[in-house]
Image (cartoon, rainbow, N blue to C red; front, side):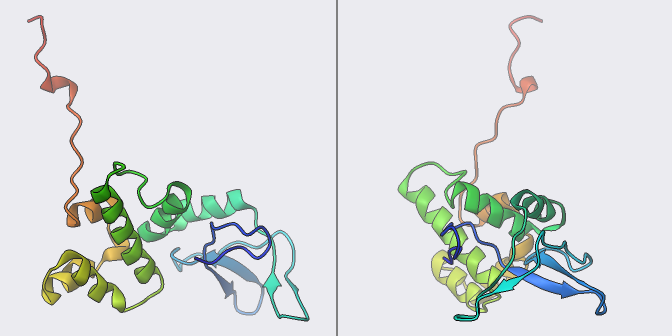
Length: 169
């Protein structure tokens, strides 16, 4: 995982620089819809003449809000994973850790645009190529719950109030 060169933090998201017909630029987190121009950083860019590193500063709250509002399902799940880890909604068991790690691995491959995502999914699930292709075709649009179900984890349903027998008629 890439770390921030300034604070060494691990919560790093890729950003695309988008331009508007030569009039200006904006920054758009990867995995957000392309219909928006993005948002501008607070300060101009700076660059190191020794190593070539280019940087600027964004308000983290603005970045998170932008991803929450405009991000695709996979981008929003990436933020959840950065905040809560890959096992965030699973029990602290070997099976829970395996499923969380497997989904995290496929998510990372899909975010990177790697064609290896289908192969790795097939290896992890032990399914045919046809099934792996079909189930990963829209991986970036699947909810976390749908991904968990594909790996065999179905959370228990909470009983509704009308499921209980009332002691009074």
